Amino acid sequence: MKRFLCLVALSFLICGGTAQAKNTSGVEFGGEIFLVKEKAIAGLDINVLFSRSFGFNFEAALAFASDGAERKGIDEDSSFLGFLLGPHLFFNQPINPMADARIGFGLDAWPLSGINKDEAKFAMPIYAEANLAVTPKMRAFVRARFYLFKSDGLGLGEEYDGDTQIPLLLSVGLSTGGGR
Image (cartoon, rainbow, N blue to C red; front, side):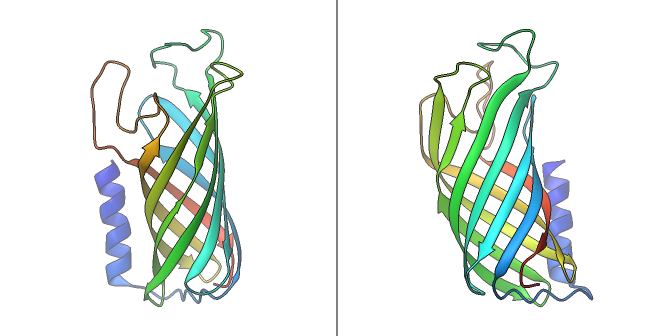
């Protein structure tokens, strides 16, 4: 599924289209869904564009364990794990009139209040993002992040049973507004 979404986004970026993305400055508001196994993570994505090539991103998302997920340290009656707060700076590079690529870095804070009220994990991510203008005021994006530094117990691609996958956190979303 992840490969399919990446191929679709790449196809749109290469083929182009009729929508025009004219990023200048402004604010983009949107929603984001994280593509993770045995968890449901979704939330808000806000971008403040200072110029065509530089901006600030803030993410706030809620994290829940899926019904079939193992319950190590999680209350059996609740599936709430915690949430993500992520302030990031990014650099924007136009690809064509309707597409941009971004690279960013910042801080991901994961207060795990659903597991333990005093538990919080932190990480320093670097991420790459592809943006596609769906309409003149709406964009779709796919984002992949990798943690350069992280708290113990916050490993991307690590499962409860010890299996490992590619250590990336993928997300997709839609946003509107900004200078488009």
